[in-house]
Image (cartoon, rainbow, N blue to C red; front, side, top):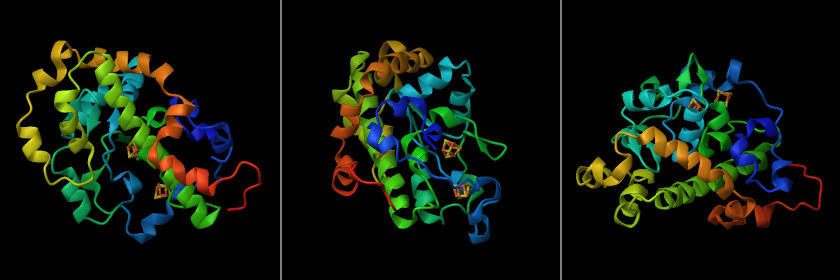
Length: 246
Ligand code: SF4
Ligand code: SF4
């Protein structure tokens, strides 16, 4: 369903791909994976996704700042690029079987449902445990999520710079916090003073996120989407000149 793609991403995904973002599978209320050991309430949301600054700004502008509190209460890191998972989360995540540990539940999950569906991140947008189009369909969605994640990363860094915060000095730190390899995260984090990260926005983080969202509207484009490394997969595997049967 195209409507299942957050609106801010719809303007970036090339039309020919957006038209392929259909999947009639809608069985989450009777999650098939529960019989495979997934937690009955958290299911595939036993994950703490990176939420970029502009998406958090979108949520705040919709009138609810509780999302920040929820993420912080779960140990999330409040950074100019967005909200990152807590230190140590990724180690624990890698040590457990995906879906099985409710203690890893997403802070935005509420009564078994995603409370930020219209502004969820790229990795969540691309997750499909099943596709009516088989392996290729699952791969399609997985790659879409990867391109969106790359775009979110690039854009959240760019917005930090555009809004006047020192990016060069902290770029490595940010990339480390986004990395799937958590080995050096603690060391990097120890060396960081939040006042240096946030500058004039220290204690005014909400405003920074809101400004990020305002700026992002014009920066999220099809060109930006196509510039991402993982987009190549679509160039090779998805042609817009034929009817798909995957
Ligand atoms: S997408 Fe998640 S909630 Fe839906 S059926 Fe698959 S594992 Fe269950
Ligand atoms: S943001 Fe929403 S979809 Fe993503 S893990 Fe959290 S609750 Fe699930």
